[in-house]
Image (cartoon, rainbow, N blue to C red):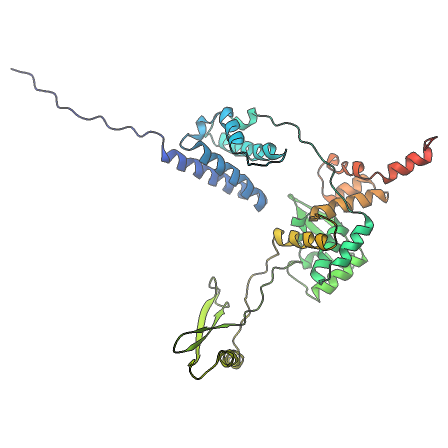
Amino acid sequence: MSAKRPVYKPKKSVKQPGSASKCLNLQMAERFRAWLGAQKYAESTQDRYFKIAAKLCRFIGNKPLSAVTPMDIGDFLTQTLPDRWADSYIADHLGPLRSFFDFLYLGGVVDSVAPRFLKFRARLKPLPSALTQSQVRKLIRTAKQPRDRALIELLYATGCRIGEIRLARVEDVDFKGRRFRVRGKRKERMVYFGAEAAESLHLYLKGRKSGYLFQDKIQEQKGYITYTKRAWIGNWKDYRTGKKGGERHSKWLGSPSTVSSSEARKRLSSYIRRQHIDLVRHKPDRPLNRSSLGFVVRELGRKAKLGNISPHTLRHTFATHMLEKGADIRAIQELLGHSYLTSTQIYTRISNRAVRSTFHKFHPRG
């Protein structure tokens, strides 16, 4: 009896790490971002760390994160260099990558933290720039708008970071004691301001008792008209419904053959007034964003012909002037919200006025 001929059965294809691995890597980057949010990192930090982690995931493609080596991290940093980069570029990328792989290591995804095997060169720490007192006065005089003047006065008077000023609320301001509480980098502290800043703040607030100090305001809508061959149509949006983008409404205003565009606009304004239609763009209380506040400071610096002025320049100026007036460095540390005194001691390198006067006073040939 002849043996049965074996039937050929094709082997099942084994799925190689492909697009699934790439998708999983990006999911890990998303989970990393969610973890940063749960740890209450600043939104700007969450965005920056996630952006760098996702950039790495796209660079390694289908390679699993568990197989990433220090050489891969080095290739990522060198092959994604922009045309022009600062000395701090590598350090600014390695920090988020180390944090990302720490997260993966604690979650059991990787066996080692590859970015921690790489070391960046010590960064040069240039002295922060500070304005003179006359330059500060010139900057303040340039601020004609009440909001802009209040912003400059507060930044210089308190030495706050722009993110701290952004989130400051009117309810927290003690005008009698000329102070308010700020929250920055997971800490709270009390900052103080003088009579000039208090006056500027009063002029800006105009009696407002609540909300963020520097609110994001949206101008009231006026309605608009559209044209067809047969009709002028008036349009407006009702934001009271809470619907995103508002609820659109329209009104027939007449035929173009008998009604001009100017008359159509008058009819729309009259209708809105008679019907007591609310055109205010109702929105929750929210602060101005960082870029808008920074733009105000930069534009004032440009108009005052002081060069490139940022909100942090006023923070440096605050600390420098305090030190030059004889303030204790530990008091300045507390006012700035520095965790370590070494962060504050950099201002001793900026403020040379006291050192210069001491030299001329005590050196035999000074």
